[in-house]
Amino acid sequence: MAYSYKGDDDYDYLFKVVLIGDSGVGKSNLLSRFTKNEFSLECKSTIGVEFATRSVHVDDKIVKAQIWDTAGQERYRAITSAYYRGAVGALIVYDVTSHITFESVERWLKELRGHTDANIVIMLVGNKADLRHLRSVSTDDARAFAERENVFFMETSALESLNVDNAFTEVLTQIYHVVSKKTLEIGDDPYALPRGQTINIGSKDDVSAVKTAGCCSA
View 1 (tube, one colour):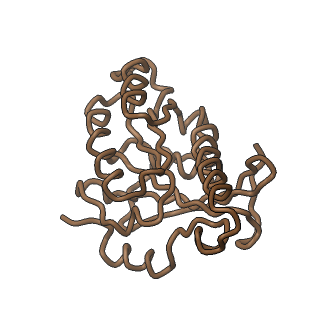
View 2: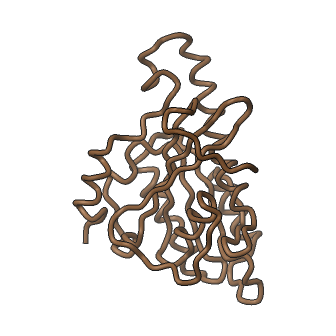
View 3: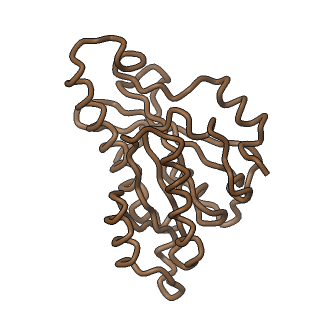
């Protein structure tokens, strides 16, 4: 897939996607691998909120994703509603070598659904799939959980760039299908969707508010 670094206004749809999951599961490396094709073995948590963008082609449209990363705040176990505001997609990430991070998925899912629209597209992501000899969460168990909760599922390796593009692109494609369906249902009503066919991802003030608040409550 070609990387696209187009101007801010050169897109058909703009989607906010959030990354959530326990600390250390590799969320930041998934983000940097997808948006910059980079990986760091010494990825350190950053206080505040980080996000990056990347545009991809879905059908004949340009979809720009603004992907938010908790940047270490998940250690406080509570993320403010501003982080979730306007999100239309989410990746809940766990580490396939750490069963406790998989056990936390249910809590993250509950929190996510409590702060977002019912139509949000959710992907369960088992990261660090390259560490096959250390695996403690089976693919079958994770897939069964995803099917039970009606969410998408994929295993990834940010290190080996395995399924990273596929996971994000699948989420963006599914969001596009949801939005396209809504657009067809509402016809030409210009007020039914923010900015015509664009999903509102929040203003710069929202970002500032989250950073000021530290994106968490102790």
